[in-house]
Amino acid sequence: MSDTRSAAAIVERCQALYDDLDFNAVRQWKASAPGRKAIGYMPIYVPRELVHAAGMLPVGILGGGDQLEVIQGDAYYQSYICRIPRSTIELGLTGRLDCLDGMLFPSICDVIRNLSGMWQILFKDKYVRYFDVPQNYEDAIGGTFYTHELEVLRDDLGRLRGAPVTDDELNASIGVYNENRAAVRALYAYRSEKPWQAPTSEVYLVLRAGMVLPPEEHTALVREYIAAADSTPRPKRDNARIVMTGSFCEQPPLGLIKSIEMAGCYIVDDDLLLVTRWLQADVPADGDPLVELSRAFLHHSAATAARYDQKREDKGVFLLKQVKTRGAEGVIFAAPSFCDPALLERPMLQDVMAKHKVPYTAFKYAENTGQMAPIREQAGTFADSIKLWSAA
Ligand code: SF4
Image (cartoon, rainbow, N blue to C red; front, side, top):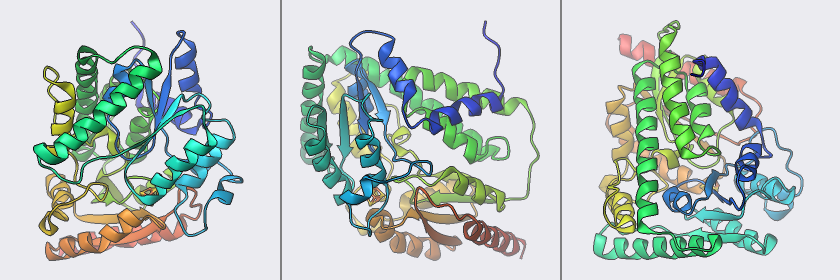
C-alpha cells in the first residue's frame, strides 16, 4: 500500500502541474501507450465525456498565467481585449501545445470565436472545433440543436481515432465524470464547511490538476486531498465568508487568490474552472448518452455569465443561491479586464445583491497582474467592513 500523502505534498504536486507550461503530464500520458491522443479545450464548458469516450485525454488550456512572457501573441490582438487569447496563441506558437491533437473552443464570446478561427489558420494539421451551445432551454428546440452539435463532435472524434465512439463508451465516460463531479462537489462542500482547513489557494490547485490529469486519477486526488486536509487541524480565523465571481474564463493569478485570503476573506464559493462543476447533477449513464448530456446542460447547468439567461428574473438567482447555501457574508466581483461577458453581467448581479442586502466589492485583474497590494487593501477593507456590519 502506498504511503498516505500530506495535504502539503498533494498541493506541491498540483503546484508542479500548474507551473508546467510545457504540459509534460500530457506528454507523459501520451507516451505511455501508442496512438494516444489529447484534445485541448478552452474555458468554460465542453462535454469532456465525448473526448474521454474516444480514448483521448481532455486538456484544459487556461492561458499562460503570470509566468509566460507574451511576445508573439500580442501581435495578433489589439491592446483593449483580455489576455487569455494572446497567451494561448503564445503557447501555441512556441510549441508548448504540440502535444495536443486538437482544440475545442467553446462558445463564450467573440474573442474565443476569433481565436478558433486563428487556430484553424495557424495550426492546419490539428483538429479545431468551435463548439456551440444552446440559448434555448426547451428539449425540442435547444435540446435538438445541442444533441446535433454533440453528434457532430462525437463523429469527428471517432474519425480522429479511426473508429466510431459507441454509446457504451460514452455511458462509461459519463459515469467516470459523474464520479469526478461528485468528488469536486465534496471538495467544495468541505471548503465551505471548514475553509480554514482547505484554503482556496490549495483547492484551486487541486482542481486545476484536473485540467491535465485523466479524470479517474483526478477524482482519486481530490478525495485524497479532502482526507489529508481534514487530518491535521489548522487555526481558524474570524475571516469574512465571501463568494468570488466573474473569474470563469481568464484565470486570476494564484497570488491574487492568496492575497484575498491573506486580507481576511474565506472564499467559500466561486466560479473558477467551471467545467468541473458546470453540470450540477449526475448525468444518467444508462440512457441515450447524447440526449442525457443535452438534458443535463439544459436543465442542470450552472447559471453564470457564461450561460444565456432567457428571462431577466433569472439574473443573479444562481449567485444569490451560492451566497445563501454557503452562508456567505459578501461577494467579490473579480473579473478579467476587458471581459465582456463578466463585466456586462456585473451591474445586473450587483443590483440583485444590493436588493438582497448582500455587501459586495469589485475589481478587475489580468492573468499576469503583479501588483497585489491594492487588491489586498481592497479585500481587507471589505472583510473589515463586513465584520463591523455583522457585529452591529
Ligand atoms: S476572459 Fe472574457 S472576454 Fe476574454 S476570452 Fe474569456 S470570456 Fe471572452
